[in-house]
Image 1 (cartoon, rainbow over the protein chains, first blue to last red):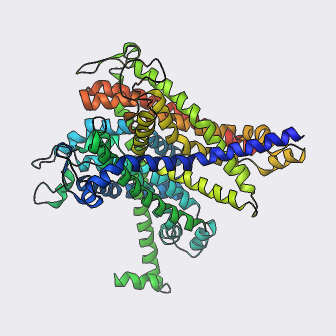
Image 2 (cartoon, each protein chain N blue to C red):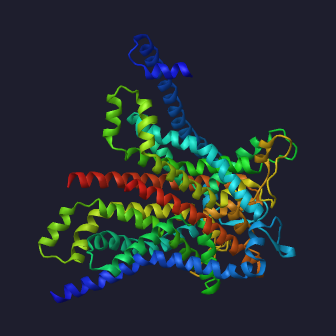
Image 3 (cartoon, rainbow over the protein chains, first blue to last red):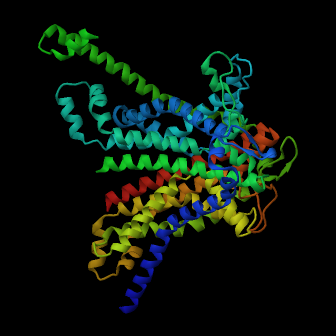
Length: 295
Length: 308
């Protein structure tokens, strides 16, 4: 009897220990990226690092502005292309689709989520980039924000669709029935009752998609061109901004980490810290919204 | 505009009501048309990407492609055998590290933390911290896991670019996935199972081990299989921890390249797109297989719990 309870107690602490591993890893990640990036923060200065236009490791110039602009712009592009599609898909799956259509679309979304990012990148390089290159604008290489945004839009779609669908399904049935009983059409009920009730969950879904977009690495390297420039329109039409090449924060780390040393390496870790903080902020915003939905 | 507002507000006039109703139905039709279109686009996007990669890949996939090692070179000569083996080494290693920790964490969070009383203030605080950790970890982008793995395992602990470093970093990456799926599986086990076991005099751990875990097993396996999928498709983490040598790894401290990494090198460094497509096709096929496993497992789980 006593032995059984002794086992019970020791197991309890062993399990507590494994439950605390995650926070320990988070702590270690923060510790190590900060420690390695510290030299850059001290040597270059936070302001110079965040606002400097020039990234020229050979001359010890480390400014991340171009990469921040690249990450933000490609995320905006992906959200603009992906969110209508993803939300449409979520409403379709939750409210409109008959069983058969649902049984086709849901696995498709799951599979889209599972496809490796390098496969998306490869598809982008081989199919999308040559298509984009056909747009007749001088300086357009096909590699750039537009190709990257399209690839990224497909990649964040499953995240947004899944979470938004859950949020829509969580709306109490009575809301829907009450609205329909008042004589509204189904669509009016969706727009006027269901979507507003699911709003915070939907916003959280979009924000989580945003976080995924900012964190994507390999597919971005493969299609965005990786030039360290602040994207500018290629001609008088401001939309040609999206034909410009760019580099993301994630890409900056992955492209250069294999040969970087000294201050350069430290600056890459500092890039990681910037990215980490950005994504932490975004995700906690999403979490806040989701929690409000629960309560 | 104003007219339509009047029409929608004043419902007593019969004529207006009729026009309003038909207009409302028109709007609904258009909107539903758009929704159907999005569903179609999702399926089409999948078919185009998967179909293209599989068709292009089929041209280079031969037994020889699968069974010979890569020989490097400018056109990415040779096959992909060593990258398949490296992937097969890395998956069980990573899963082997992450699964016990992940399942253990989930068991604590569901079975122990759920029942806590007010007098266990410190423990409750710890549980909150642990939950925060899981949530945060699941949002960390993979390249950060790579950087971290590079700083800690590759450099500080001096494991070098190796299977060991990559597996440890990869385990951190898939840990939240396993914890979350296991938590869900445990929550789905009916309370009466636990009560029945406890009433028979079993301790809490005996109940968990003998009753709850077996009932939740399909769900837990789903989490593990999801983890397998992530390791197979992950690139960023292994790009900075695994080294990228295409030779066959012979020990834990040897580097290597997984299929996904190989695809990246083929496409970016050697521009051997045909071979890259071949590798991509194998990757996509493995992901399809993995998804099929997950689907059949989750179907079994729902059936079992409904039946029980």
